[in-house]
Figure 1 (cartoon, rainbow, N blue to C red):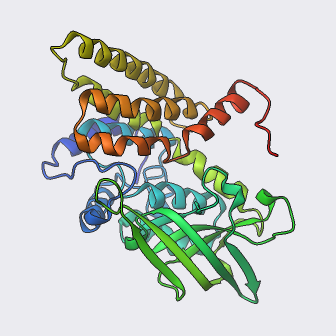
Figure 2: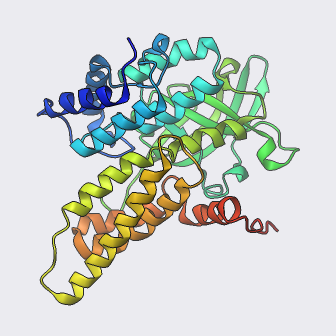
Length: 353
């Protein structure tokens, strides 16, 4: 596909979206398992229309455009209230890990099926004893010839039950500093020894799973990046997770525009205070631009901390139940405060006894 200037691209995206009267409502960063078929069909439509993998290389199914074009697509999708991608884990995290660190064979195998919506991915990072302290993970991968034998448990894995593949962190060297002995793998979720169990949420749904790995034999060519160098791959990947904050700012703006003004003076003051705070976060997000930075932690923290009071002041019972999860997904509020303190304010690092 030929190059296209940013304004023309944005208008083309806006025109195409306005014609999609049957487009699905935005389900957020993670595809709910109950919408699996709908999500895959939507991703195929995006691919056919040229709005999938906007900044991916053309040879891997993308448009070969820029990060600014990708950000513009995300913003226009947010304005239209539709999903920008099927699933962020596959289209952002796994894809960017492959594009930055994958071999030519790995890219050829995975990228095109992913951008077309034929392949859904999950993220196998968190563990019962390693959530905020991700480097403390205990899942082990021991090399045995041309395979790695993987055993351990992962938890809070979004959409594992519908995913064909996952991105996996496992410990490959237990005798070095904890963040230096981790490797990053692509995991075929159909391999023997993998068991997925749904986790029932307060909402009554099961968007997350726990995954048990019992001597799963993972081919060595599924290693991404250097052996024992998975921490660097993961950190680059998670930075991209927080880099789509511009679309979040647009979605936040739409929510703020739709806030009803209560008749009660006390509630009205509280709602207007939250709206003002939300507008400030919206402007901060817009200043970041299309490329992720540690400054995105400021916006992530602010949005997470206002989610519950905002839901209480303006939302339904369902939104109130869901709101506390905003403090956990994509990096907990405690982790965001550490990033802000250490990398933005230059404060001493948190003590690690």
